[in-house]
Amino acid sequence: MAIYYFDVRDGDELVVDEEGMELRDIGAAQDEAARSLAGIAWDGMRSDGVQTQQMAIEVRDLYGPVMEVKFAFVIKRKQ
Image (cartoon, rainbow, N blue to C red; front, side, top):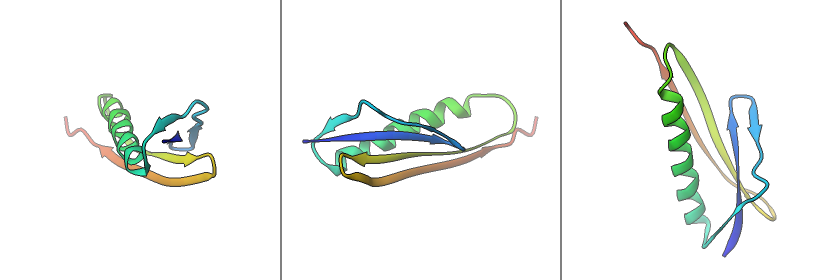
């Protein structure tokens, strides 16, 4: 088991995870990052109007960065 930290980048804003999460391996960390990013994207897509969003979760362990999971979307309503 290792502790992984999930720092959320939304555009130019970075929210640093100071607590972390204990997970069995890097695969479990990737799954957690993907699920978290999907939830954040879902919340962002529910707003009205034209919206462009670029988000990422930067995963690190005690020794430094281990992966980055990115997601980008554009919403353009025609009506």
